[in-house]
Length: 262
Image 1: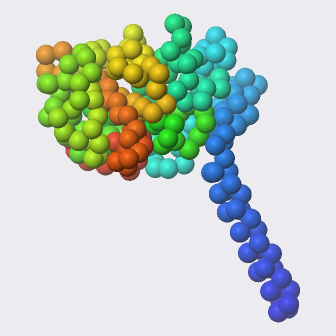
Image 2: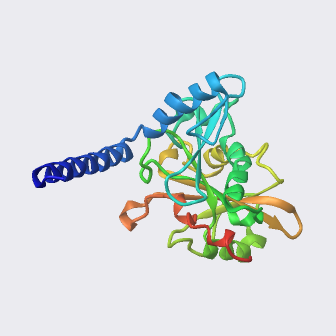
Image 3: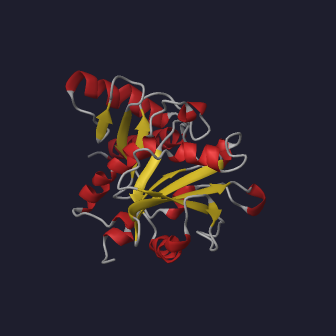
């Protein structure tokens, strides 16, 4: 290859390389990227071809309202996102508190099988978690619930505290990831009949008018005297102390618990 031609080829390749990463960075910074993927690709593909790609699943239910998609997140081998098929901004949306609102957390818990599939084996329920960040801690303007493994240290703390977690919201006596969370317990193997958005809005004083500054994390739990259930965690943003209420901080996208014996 002539030297000049070789240099031109290298320059062209470098230009494409740079353009690719500029485009990728722009896409990553686009706060509407999740909505574009679900609304522009996953739902039409499911409707027209019965193939939800690039999503792992699309459930249209009785149409668009209440439907959801589950998309593999670009971070980690086991992290998935549940995303409504209707446009909902985030935890602050009043649509989540309507009398007939979909229980997206219940749907997200059913999506845990994708985490287990990615690992190749089932997981104890207290290693699995669901998280939604506050509007201060998120990067996307479409509601999404993170489905992934729990951090090992958080699992151990909740195991130690579970006997003291009751049916009403109460601050935990220990910090989780350096932040003061409150917790409550619900019973049952699924979240049917337990909508964490409504439990927060109507159970924590002032939360209904300030949902956007809260985060929610749901962790599966096995209680000695109550059987299967969940711990629901809430934190409110406190920027003065460096807390943006990003409950995703309690998750482990490397899923150490899924790769070691509990």
